[in-house]
Image 1 (cartoon, rainbow, N blue to C red):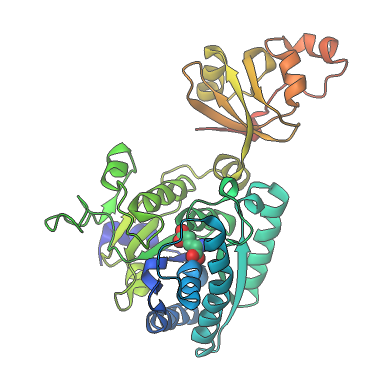
Image 2: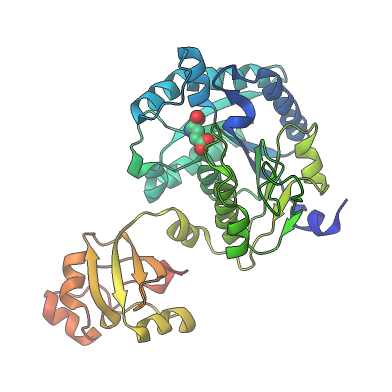
Length: 376
Ligand code: GLU
């Protein structure tokens, strides 16, 4: 056991296991049933030991392509979506069979980014997932590939798995893939590269190490895993990226064995609503702030007042999420606005006492209340 690794994993009860496309499927051979069965066996053992597991599984598109006999990588989104529709039923059926062998039930859950960006649907999905866990069912989540269009895609399932970790308040994210973790260089091209066992803080250097190592079949590559780990670290939750073909990989990780790369969480867990604002909500516009307002938000924990807003960009309603930009064009904060873009455009720069006179009403002093504001 490795003390540095054991500590952050202590007390984990609920975990998200992300299973990558290149691990369990290929265009030529479809799903790798033997591997799926081995992973199901492992997860069944964990469940018996009291762990709650939610799976995020890729593999629908590759499985569909194999079934359809499409030998080349499709470029067009509709072909990928059609393949996903064919492959998703095969994928879930494979999980169904693999877990049935251990007397366990699975549920198919297909999500789009829109579902999680909308607070009501986010809460609804959370209720469904926790109800499934309460019923002792293992949810198997994938992106609803057939309905998504480019703008509302999760981009990749690593990102989806990160958001699901927050959605169900899991204490650990495990990303199983065909790479063993984060290396000091791309191990496929540099055999001398060594595995980094623990990443304490994800910074520009970590992201550089993870420069895109996506294989032709893998969607995300290491970069998307590191980005997901960064998001999850911000929730105060650790991530382990590890090779999914190792026997007993999950139990070894949970025991604190040195397998794959462990990304440590950041301190100071935000509450769930703020997490959602920071990572999941989709912004509808931007408020450009003056330096004084940025300072008041960032260092004094203040709400954003209309007087600190210099410019309003985009169209949004009260309650929508917006980005707050500092004078140098960096996103300083995100929050839910109390006023629409039309109203804010009228009262930007105005003092609190002037709002009612300008709008004919004043519902709030703040443009964004600090309870609905997250500093980035
Ligand atoms: N949803 C895609 C599939 O099931 C995979 C996307 C990804 O792995 O990032 O094939």
